[in-house]
Length: 312
Image (cartoon, rainbow, N blue to C red; front, side, top):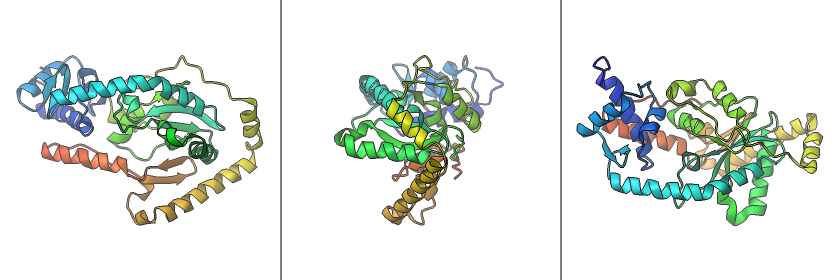
């Protein structure tokens, strides 16, 4: 271990990373700790640092995974969740490529737990969707209607709660939660737009300076849309489509304010229900804030700190 490296400077961000994923009872291997560490770390020194932390009692290790708590149970749970994720991956990609064929959908990514190769018993298949600029709300409404009318009992395989413009990709929530989600996105076909997403959110690379942000599946070509879909897009590509997109956005915003009036004065309203022209977001359970608060609690109990600011 390099004596010039301060123990506090190096140990705290490593422990912060492991405590973040401990929220999900998810121990990390060496590569994952490196990639998701919020500070620059010398990869060659990392094994020695982790060994020191284990010897001091800060961490525990089992079968190459590092964490806190009951490691045998956590590792067994992780292996079971990885097997389920692998079993569901083909279906997830297939459904994602199906979503890409909908009007005004530009690119689709697997997000949430399955993008991290994890699925538990109650896990959904989450999708992060980029839509044509100025038609975010039309694409969202069409997919939500399809999910409600056609899917019904299979709706857990089409969890679509975040839509973003393919041109204006700036995300307001600059936090560890958002950075991890962006870093782990898996494109179902065309991967070039993930690079644009990262480029338009430069704070992500500052939050996760060791992550390579490589796009997988870049060799998988997106499926062409059918004649009916292309005709639909052509009809609504002009000012009529623009007006309709605005109307849908305002109408859904109004419905949300009525349906979730109990959150009317909640400080995280915008975090849960974003209805901007370029973003459609629906997270009524406020999962984002809950995760950040749990992370802060773990950090406080370990007497270390981390930046978890969420700007809305």
